Image 1 (cartoon, rainbow, N blue to C red):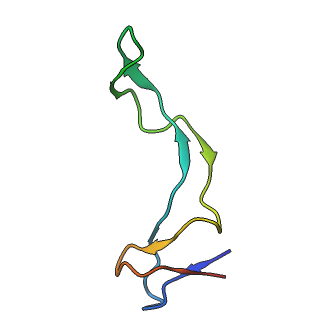
Image 2: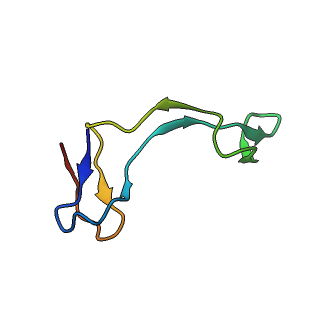
Length: 64
């Protein structure tokens, strides 16, 4: 799979979703206080079913 911007082939950075694991500091009731780290693992990597948006111009990417 390759994402391409319909506006410019020079736009090569895209925004899409991934599902990650993240450790949190919580209170005694399990309520979020703050993040303990950025990411401890990935549950779901970006794939074809996601929307891929060009970071440079905001156009929706074409996936080949």
